[in-house]
Image (tube, rainbow, N blue to C red; front, side, top):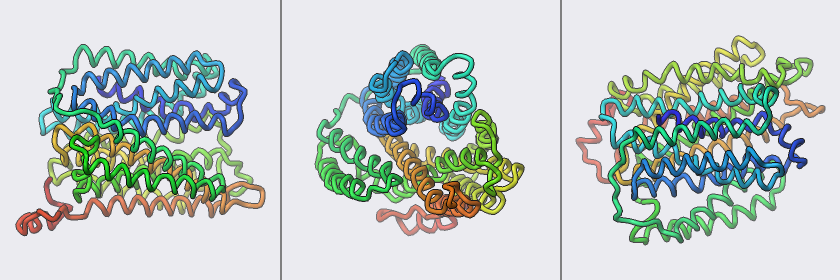
Length: 460
């Protein structure tokens, strides 16, 4: 049930990417116009995810999950019938409410799954992100050819409706707090600074430093104003004191680095496999075959999913974060030096999928365990945003690196791919090292420091 809910969102997140050219032609728009199909969805999901997560904390997670899925289905249906760009964008904005599916699913697991099985359940939901994204990339081409681009939205809309029905029938309602409310000024300030931040990041590859600086100049005071409001509000949307705890801070930074590495691969690998080998790199694969190259990533994630619970029980999610981040970093190092071979690339992607899957499950488990039960939805929503921001930064940074080291004909050189894989491998290594940091905060006793000193083998 929860996996179906997560699948409906993860499929929509990447299903439109291989079809952007089709949308540009069918909607009679420009390349910059069609890019808003991704940007609008990203901005909406980033803003709505923690807000809906907080509503779930206050008034019931099942109710919030059903509402999120209903909005996702409605937005997908609107995009499915769209004949022009504005209507399509409106649908994509509504679909962004589906971003709350993941944090709400984690919160429901915390409330209703026994502690010994929580890590495995969270890992299964986390695996859907990678598997759903790979499946969507693989299926987009056949769906357009056999049906039409409208079905890229009808199919996930149907999946969301089915998941909402299953949630209503089978999911128990969580305890409803009713002791708080959503702070409207906090929400507006949060939406403002996050929107300008993400827009600044997406403007980086365009080479317009003035626009980037202007957006950054708006972001900083809005973010400062939001933090000031949240720290003084009687009922803040986000408890910043909880997020400032060393464990939560390290977990969110690790998530940002993991998102940076994972989404960068989703951009770099398709470009690499489609590039004409006469340029010195690439395999000349057709666009319809790109999804096949990404399947090992999903396979690797599925392979490690059953191990998350065992590792967590044996030595804690920090160990899983370290092992997963290290495996992903090694895979990027492998691709940096051996991306000229199909076999090496596919094996490295298998390892990358295993590492990313293990690490993402670990940060989800750490987030759930690090906050009070009545803040699970909003805290996991913030963690989801960190992945989104990291992914946005990763894809744009990858584009900038490839463009900066391109050959005279505009094609990325072999060295360009080496640089990209190496840079993002270092980011993933940083995420792994955060799994080795002791969780000694200002209130931690000396005995606790000694207990957690051998971090890799300690329990959480």
